[in-house]
Image (cartoon, rainbow, N blue to C red; front, side, top):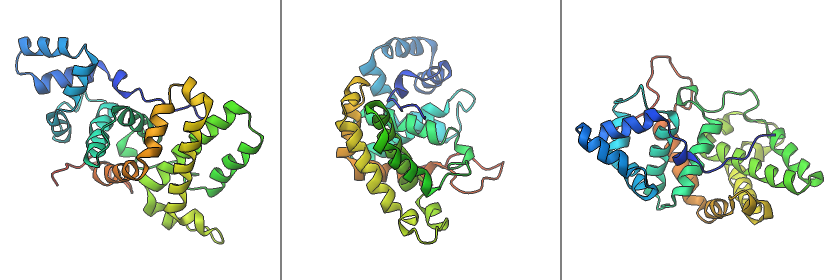
Length: 241
């Protein structure tokens, strides 16, 4: 069973990411050292990560050898979330790790697995809830919420192209949207959400569901190569395009 997704992006950036941030925002060794010291403090690190120069530099291709996919996803999804009024950095952390789970590399496109749009996969998880114990039920609710969010927010057009005769809801992104919202709420209400330190982020996702879905959809259109990907094509588009 898939592991839970935790909002840990900001604590998981690589040394190369830190070097990229320093090189992008500081002009000499003295200022880099000062910035490095500031970034030891979480509040200051958060302010630094919100500097628009970082996302601009990634999109311009600077530091491409050092920047991890995780940092790129965080900067981009944080931008999109703030654009729709979602300021909670925990949500940006969670959505970054969500993207790392379902789209680990932008050049891969969306969900390369053969069963990506298998309606029976979702139904199977829902049926499994009936005989699940507390822990299994919590994990299944989380997994259904995440999977349905991926379907409705990242690749709704592909859903419509994979018609399943006699099962109209399987081809309707709104079915998956309602499913995801409902199961994030169920996961948030579970006792284990508190034990796993996920209650607050699940509640915020449930509370700001339409805006978060919109931010992810905008992210996918702006930054992901959703369809077939020529080898020479860039992995991201500039917001300025």
